[in-house]
Image 1 (cartoon, rainbow, N blue to C red):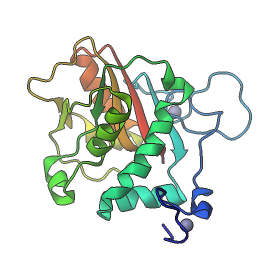
Image 2 (image 1 turned 45 degrees about the vertical axis):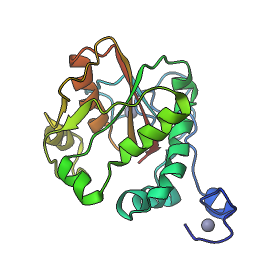
Image 3 (image 1 turned 120 degrees about the vertical axis):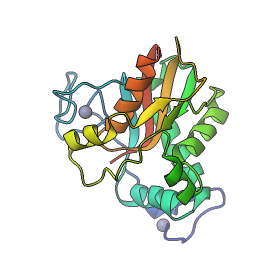
Image 4 (image 1 turned 135 degrees about the horizontal axis):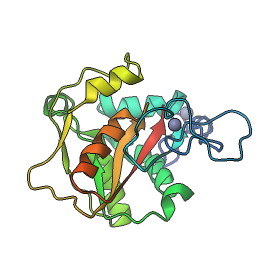
Length: 219
Ligand SMILES: [Zn+2]
Ligand SMILES: [Zn+2]
């Protein structure tokens, strides 16, 4: 993002690239939250304990801080749509992670944004990412969900407020059929996992066999 010495075909210079933080184990097996220290057994973080999570696992390969956060912000709000290729590369790393590599997937479903927000932004970031991932993997991408409530921004809310805010915010699109399908949900950033969980709840209630999630970054 510094715009210096960027090689052709790349988006970041080598010093910015070095600041992209890969999430390394140990991390929460449900939401990828990294954990300091050494834990060898399976581990669930405080964010995921004591709540019902509807997805089968969410993987993010990169920490959504610093340069990663900046790039995603520019992509979403700064109309720098070309940055989708870099964000999709981070997303691809999540799909190639050992937790997702061997999972069978039938369809990629982007987390939808509300029509009003999509209008103001001109695109839905998750759809753009889902299309790129679909082209790379040959797994079809289908917008199976729609957002029916304009939720206020989640940023200032805590976990239970987020869940309340999201309740019934999504529904299956008319004519969408997920029965018996193994779904990969796509979004740019995983924060608490509430959005992904709410989408997974709707998909499973509609008959999806499994719902995994991949995001480009973990906030
Ligand atoms: Zn740079
Ligand atoms: Zn967790």
